[in-house]
Length: 194
Image (cartoon, rainbow, N blue to C red):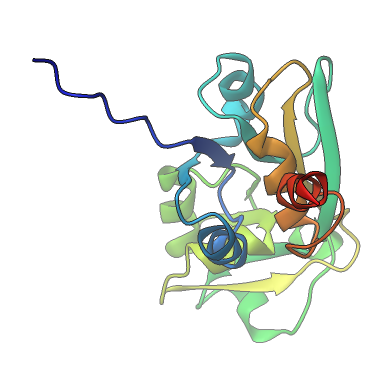
C-alpha cells in the first residue's frame, strides 16, 4: 500500500540587494497567502542579474543600473546617498556634506567588510545608499547625506519568460494593490465563480 503524496506548497523566491528592507511586504504576503512559502535571500549587487538568469530567485529587488535584456523592471524608489564615516571623522560633526567636502578622503562605494573597517578607523569614507548604512548600523560609524551626489534607484526585476504566476501577486503586494483588486489572481478567480 502506497501512502498518498503530499502536494508541495507553492513558493516564490525573492532576492534583494543589501539595504532593501522587505518587512512590510513579507507581512502583507504572509497575511494574504498563508499557504505559500516566500523564500527571501540577500543577493550581492554584482550578482543581482545572475541570480535571476540562473533561476536562483524568481524576482529580485535590484539596484540600478542592471542589464535589462530579457528582464521586466519596475522602478520603485530613489535612495539618498550618504557619507558613512567614523564618529571621529570631521564629516560626523556636520549635518550634510558635498562631494567636494570628501575630495581629500579615500572614498569607496563598495561596502566590503574591509572598507567598512577602514571607515571605522577614520582611514576612508564610504559613499553608499542610506539604506545600506542604516541596515548595517554600527556604533562606531555615522552617516550624513551627500547633497550633490546622484541618488540610486531600487527596482523590482524578473525574467520575462519566468512562468511563476505568483510573481504577479508579489508585484501587486509591492505596488500596494488591495487583496480585492481586479488585477490579482484571487480577485479574478472570485469573479469567474460568480
